Length: 201
Image (cartoon, rainbow, N blue to C red; front, top):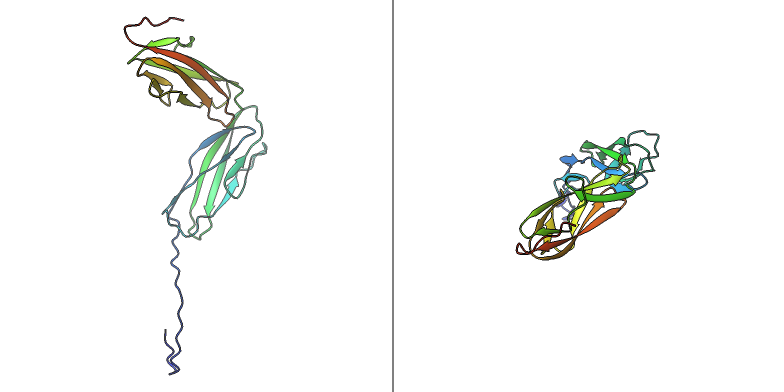
């Protein structure tokens, strides 16, 4: 900009375009008592100028707290407890979101069985499927697991515990409690070619 007083002096300045938050979402979550979980909000658009949030948790008598980064800390509980977490945008957009977080008794043991509750078979045929089921102690724990195969070329396992045999070999299938305790159980299964006789034990 040039001065109009005839001095010829010029000045420049920058204009910052502030992009306000338009969407803010939180997903329900769960965690074992005594563990912590960091909630990850979905914020849009991706190039929001200020993504800072103010976090709060509903009043409770269980020592459940949340910090300014969305990290929820908990204490041991005997029964499942649900609290409401709220995040509020600090960019002046007025955006706010809430979710429920359930705190469960911590998993102390994980067991893997067949779909009918019996012990998993020691071997299965190539090109067949096997349904595995995980259970936990105490029964009031979250009862949610992640599944993993030690060798996806021999057999894969999906998020529901369904094992698909691909080729002959031995593979270890592991179910890990998804409540933060990392308690797990594993079974070793032999995948045999259809010309072999699967073991019943």
